[in-house]
Every structure is written in C-alpha cells, then in structure tokens.
Amino acid sequence: MSIIETRRILLEGVATEVTREGDQLHAPDGRTVHVDRAIHLPPCTPTKIICAHLNFMNRVHELKTTSPDTPSYFQKPTSALNSHKGHVVRPQGCKYLNYEGEVGIVVGRTCRHIRMADAENYIAGYTLANDFGLHDFRETDRGSMVRVKGADTLGPLGPGLVRGWRPDGKVLRTRVNGKVVQEASLDELIWSMAYLLTDLARTHTFYPGDVILTGTPANSRPVQPGDVVTVEVDGLGMLENLIVEGASGISDECGSPPTDTAVVRGVALGEGLKE
Image 1: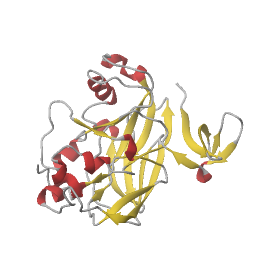
Image 2 (image 1 turned 180 degrees about the vertical axis):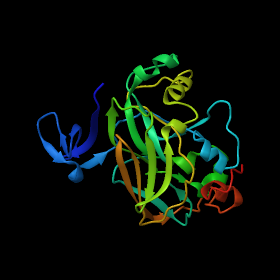
Image 3 (image 1 turned 30 degrees about the vertical axis):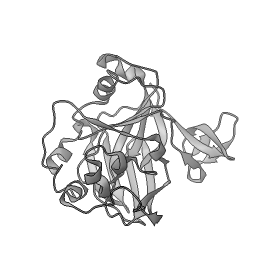
C-alpha cells in the first residue's frame, strides 16, 4: 500500500483537507500552500480520544510499578485538542506540565466487536500526539485524569494523518529545545495497535476520526513556558508545540487548588507511581 498523508489546515479561513506532496499541500480545488506557511488544525475530527496508560515497559520500570495483564485507559476530551504549531498553555501557579510523545491510531470505519486479525481494516492511519499532563492536579483527580489530561490545549495531534504507514521498527523521539528527552522503538509497545482497538471495541463503538493514543515511553518530565517540544517518528513527520504561560491562574472560588505533593512529584519527576 502506498503512503498517503493528508492534513487539515485553515485555507483562507476555511477548514480544508489537503494532501501533502513534498513541501506542498494540495487542496482539492487546485490551490497549494507550503507546509511551513500553513495554519494547521488537528488532522481528524474525533468524537472521542481514548488513551492507554502504561504501554512501554521502560515507563513501567521508571515508575517502579508492574505492568498489568491487560491495558487500562482514560479519556481525553475533544475540547483538549490542539494542533501542529499550536500553543500549549500552562496556567499560572502550576509547575508540573509534562510532555508525553506518542503515536495516535485514527479510526477509519465504524466498528464494534471486531476480531484482532481484522483490526487493521478499521484503522484509517496514524498521527503523532503529545499527551500533555498537568500533574499539579494528579492528587486532586484521584486517578480520573480529568484535569490532569483534559485541560484545554493539552491534546496536540498532527501534523498529518498518514495512511499506509506501518509502526514496525519505527523509533519515537521527543525533543525539548532540540535535545532528545524520550526515545523508544514502537516494537517495545506492550500491547499492539491492533490489540488496543480490539480491546476497546468490545465496549465502545468507534467512528471515523476517533483516536486512540498508544502510550509514552520513559522520561516524561515538566516543561516551562518558552520551551519548544517536538515529537517525531519516521514516516509520520514532526509535531511541534510551544509552551506558553496562561493569562491567569486557577480560580480559587471552588475546587481544590494545584498541589505539590509526593503523589504529584512521583509521576511528574519520574520518582515512582504513588496513588
């Protein structure tokens, strides 16, 4: 199967799906734009984003825990979606905004109750993701990940949706300001792409554009406003985001404030999983 990459961009103010050919993005009506001048949108429009917890053994070991027999998941709301070159906001007063470079599965056909041998037939392609986590709320969330992973801007996807690409032998690298901070082969995934989709489809109906994030390797760490974070995998391109400080802090009118505890630091600094 040939490799085809599509992207979604704002073209003269309209969301448009384009096809990449080299450094040019081609719209169906013949218009073209250079990749560096395009205003990117997320490459798909999911109804849901479901994320696998620990799916790299080096991350399991780093957090001083054990791998379960089957995967567990959390959901990232679509309101968290962000894109290539989009700004990721760390609210004032928060300290532990962590990067997590990942590969995302993009569903291509409606599916439920599928066989693992058929799973690839329901996958449209793959994209890059950075599953940012605001760990200042980890203790408050009590494992739900609602605020940790669901805050606005914490779900960059892109730059494109790549069809015909295979994960076998590919290496994922995350960089902060050009320095490699995460590196792992996708062959090290504990549960395969097909396994994750098949498992989740036992209880969930997936629709075209839905996304499954497949997990991050070791060395997820906090970043600061001004940092540039990139995620790269051969054949999927490079997803780049700038960290910025929010215009305001977290309101203290209600709810728990951000905290700095052993539970928070355990994951944010890779000291161990403490719940």
